[in-house]
Amino acid sequence: MAFLDKETTQSPHSTETYKPALRWTLDFELKNYELALFKDDMPNYFTLLENNDAAMYLPELTISMAFKQVNVNLSKTSSDKDNWNRINRFESDIYEAVPTFFVGGPIWALAWLPIPSLIWSKNPTQYVAISTHPTMESKYTVRNKYLGPNIIQIWDVGSLNHQVNSKIRSPVLAYAIAHNSGTIWCLEWCPSGCYQDVDLDNYKADESKIRRMGLLAAACSDGCINIYSLPFADELKFEKTENNSLPIYKTDPVMTLVVNTLIYDNNEQDWQCTKLSWTKEHGH
Image 1: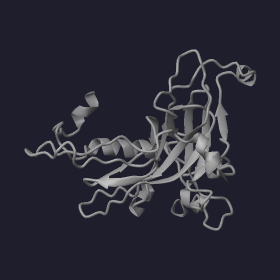
Image 2 (image 1 turned 90 degrees about the vertical axis):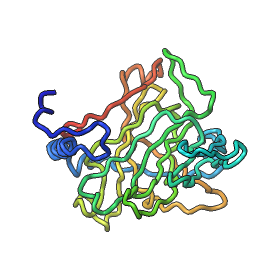
Image 3 (image 1 turned 45 degrees about the vertical axis):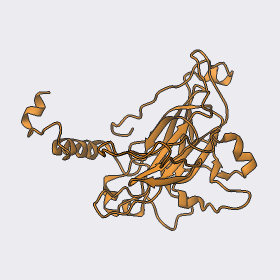
Image 4 (image 1 turned 180 degrees about the vertical axis):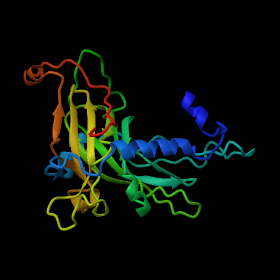
């Protein structure tokens, strides 16, 4: 920790950004991050599922538990019968200036989309990938693999501008990826090189290919890691209809990582992948 002796001290209770840490982070990104990597791993074809087909992949809870927010600093609190709220599955609202949404089940994995520092001046939309257990009673034991229908949810949470007068909007389910790999224990985006934007000179607006948001790796209970190439939501052009009320899609991963090819091909895996970490070093 001797390197800290060279930096200015700061109270551990301070709410200000620790400037040396910000500098270290930027220096690391300049050394290791790129704007264009894995250029061949573009999104595969996305198939929109109709309601009847999508239903089997959705988490089981259609409405959240009752909740309310209480200011503990107020001497007078409301009655236990007052101000309780519930949120329907895949819906959201804002309570006490806090965006809140319900994903339908117990969350076991989430990951924020990394956005290149050059894009921050555009106040970009932020996205978070989330996966839940299919049910509240889902159980998983060691020495076993588990397959089954589930989804990876991609939520649009807006620009998250923390300026005093900034406008807060409710999060929106951008889309979800249906899969049969069971539950997902860990999600992680490729740290750099996969976010496409015309201002980064890694995407042209007139290209026929859809614009890529990023590469998302999922550690699954079937023992594999699936890597999905995901587009920005507006590229999918979802329109709500009577038969398609939710943006639930099927697509193939661009890559699947396995421990042993022979065991995988013979369907003899008896383990789960519970953790992954995408290296932050150059090239990822």
